[in-house]
Length: 370
Image 1 (cartoon, rainbow, N blue to C red):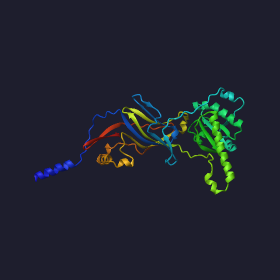
Image 2: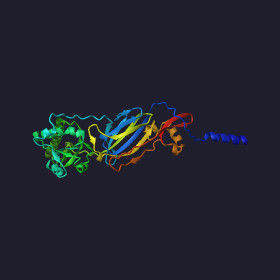
Image 3: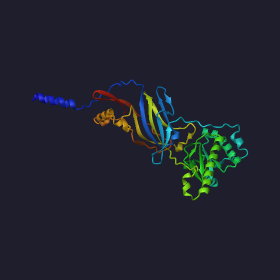
């Protein structure tokens, strides 16, 4: 009887899982660790999102592009347009002029200075309008001023049916806020008093601006010619040319991917900046949602084809037995961080601890945030 009880007790102890924890020096000698992230910027355009990395070893990588993707979002936060891999921002070409802005203004200003008292009337007067919304302190705006005046002169000389205007967004801050100007300079096309998106973001030369205006007018003329020729003919509807209409553009961006970072104290930044604009601080909202943030090879939120592997099934069985306080692999997931005032941004301070789960006969490392 005693032998039977001992046999039964030993068998039961062998079959039962015990949980034990200990603190030890990390034996991992890999110089880098993988950082996985998926973050939604609620009110920032993908063009102005930069992923940067700094650390105590002197690493300084700005606008990291490898293994990072961006998606433009619609007003409900759903993916709408794939903005591609996080490409290097191309610097636009600026034009240098011999004349100063004052010299160009000696025979009068062709680019009309707009303010709240004449902005709406200007748009009503011109079926097509191209407007530069600028800040006097913005270096890119200063470089553009003579080009914009020369462009206005060229439009006048060619007799193009376009109103060319400009708005000082420091003097008329509310007007620019109403127009949702997020960066300087903002070069925006208007048709029948309505803004046409996306904004112009190509080269800032007289030739480039004139070419853009001509293409807009050509598209509009083709549309009007088609309307005149095919009015009331439903069979021709599918052949309707593009009239250069506005494309809905909600300034939301989802940025995701992974980085290999050094195992030393450092900073991972998702920052609002541009190589061709100065951002409007009063309109820069860095409210964001952390969809996912973890370190190491991901073991949660895996693609379906990886969920069914024998290793992952074993990991899931073991994790079910781990107390919740030891499963801090991605504690920031699905958290929203809302800014309610200007010039605010959240800074997240995290400590990364390597956690080793001994799963019977094998050791598998999982990095967790605590």
